[in-house]
Length: 159
Image (cartoon, rainbow, N blue to C red; front, top):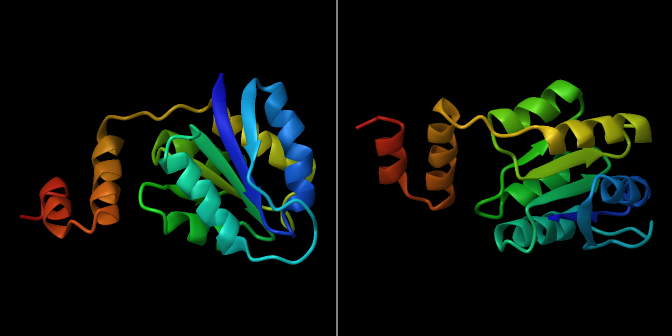
C-alpha cells in the first residue's frame, strides 16, 4: 500500500480532516503529522514535518495545507529533497507531477473548497512522472539541494 503523510496549520486543519478519509478511500496508508485543532499554530512546523517524512522515506508523498498553501510550500521546500508544489487547479496538479515530480502537494484551505481539493488530490495522486527530458531538471534541483554548484553547472550544461 502506498504511504502518504499529511500536515497542516490551524487554517488547514478543517480541510485536512475532510481529505484524510478521501485519500484513505483511494487505498493510501495515511499518517497525520498534525496539527490536530484550529488553535493557532505556525505553518513552517508542519511544512518541515511533512518534508522530512517524505525525504526520510517514511512516506512516498505528502500533502501540506495552510490558508493559501504558499507558506507551507515554502517551508516544505526548505527541506532538501522536497519538491513541494502549491496547486490551485487540475492543470497544476497534473504538471507538478508529470514534469516536476513533486513529492509534496500544498493546498490552500482558504482558496479551495472540499470538492476542488478532492479533484486536485486525485489528479495529483494518479499522475505519473514522465521522466525523459524532465529528469535532467529534477537532477538540477537535486544539485541545488546539495548546494553543489559545480554539479548543477555540469547537469545544466553550463560548463
